[in-house]
Image 1 (cartoon, one colour):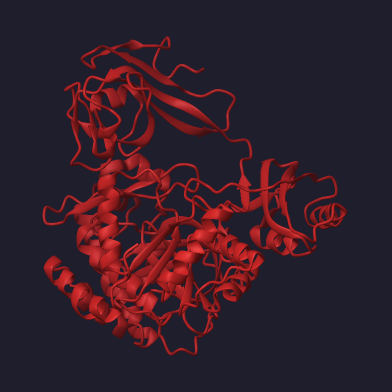
Image 2 (image 1 turned 90 degrees about the horizontal axis):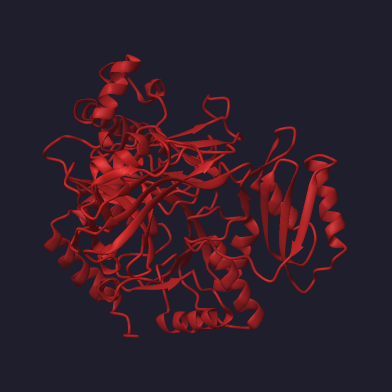
Amino acid sequence: MLPPLPESLVRNVVYPVYRGFRRDRVLDILDELEHNQFLPEGEIEDLKWRKLSVLLEAAEHHVPYYRDLFEREGIDPAAFESPADMVAIPFLTKEIIRGEKRRMISKDPLRRGYPSSTGGSTGEPLHFWCDTAADPVRRATSMRGYRWTGFDIGGRQAMLWGSHLDRSLKERVSEGAKNFFNNIMTLSSFDMTPETMRRYAAKLRRFRPSIVIGYPSALTAFSEFCRGAGVRLPSPKAVVTGGERLFPHQRDLIEGAFHADVFDRYGSREFSTVALECSEHKGLHIFNDLFHVEVIHESGRAAQSGEIGELVITDLSNLYMPFIRYRTGDLAMPTQRKCRCGRGLPLLERIEGRSFDSIVTPEGKKVGGFFWTLLSRAVPGIDRFQIEQRERAGIIFRIVPGEAWRDDHIEVLAGKIRENCCENFRIDFQVVDDIPLTPAGKTKFIISNIEERLVIKSKIHKAHISGDAPEENDCLRIDVKLMELGNVAAFEKILIVNATSGARLETFALEAERGSGDIIACGAVSRLCRPGDEISVMAFTWSTGESDDFSNILVDEENRFVRYLTEKAGDRI
């Protein structure tokens, strides 16, 4: 590993020269954001309203989905007088985005975008488009947040994150060069074995980062290992957590291992950083100059201080594919408290986690993640835990035991669970050696799979790769007619089974010319699917029924439709 560059060289030479070459105004925007945060709250609200007005006008005139929505619902954004009037606009959901597809995208000829996607923590990734013009804003937003921790441009960053293990040599070289010139070291959270964590600790001691960034679960596991093995860690200026809910015991453990304050951050792939703790550590400041954030109670009204509700976010910067009143599925608690730091940005009391991070009792009562993490501290010796629910009658409670664990603790835990849920609540305790990470490199404390099954809904059988486009983004472009016949949507996650090479891979589908017979492997897909290869393309969905619609089509060697392999389109299996 090459030694890191001097921080002053990166801050004063490398970064400004690169940003000047890109002509993206990141540093100018950063200066503007630094100024905005200390404006009075009323002035920030006025700034937000001006940006909201521009967003709504652009959506109404240039985005087919919103134009039709406003007309259908009788909404006139020009008549809005304040952000409070936004409640007239129906919520945007992931299902709407998947269903409306390109109708969500601006038709403004002067606006450009690029594709992105979430990691699919709910079981299905979301594919969407970012505004190219907003990319510098996203970068400046993250940097403003990092400066709250004492970090600045050029400082050494260590990231314990869900880095992909199957990247090509070209991708690894490109990312390695960017990381080197930005003083970034990445450590994958996918492979957290004792040997790997010991190696990570040695790398961190040599690198001496100014800031460490990672998932709470990954940093907790790493901190626990280092504490137990007597492995020394460096002391950065700060540790920033994100991607999952941070629990109090995790904060204590991470701060003890790194001898640094933990700053909790809330954000997502759709928006970048939305809220962050300042040095007061008494709630998360909402980036109100960049987002309109609502916390909606389950009754449909705005949540009050001390109540839990779902975060509904409007992005003020993405005019290419507007996210207006987007339901995130994340839960938070608002507060009217003012922070002593002097910033005019409002606060969230805390992030509660995902809306599906709850257990449902037979009576319909929801028991959220806070109860379960407190329960895990009720008896000694629980290093890690996971709750899985497959039916309302009960749960599976997995425990990775520590030195202080005793089997009679199960009786104590069962009593507290039944006291909070119901007397006949069934609990299957499983003492295990490990709890595997999710595909994104995170730990899920609560898994709710009540009455859900992943079933196949679409299949294009015996198709052939007609061409490749390695320079494009990773995807499989498919003749629109075949997509319609096979019930495959644009941007939908698909599984490709290559009968020629035996390869299996996941990517997403994009449209090719109607009637062309084209099935084109793009980007990294072209490395595993060559022109002429015979493939099958499948798409899946979550089901709660006993049987589900299945479109299964057969095509010839020219990718022309032959027939349905069920009696008719949509036959049940």
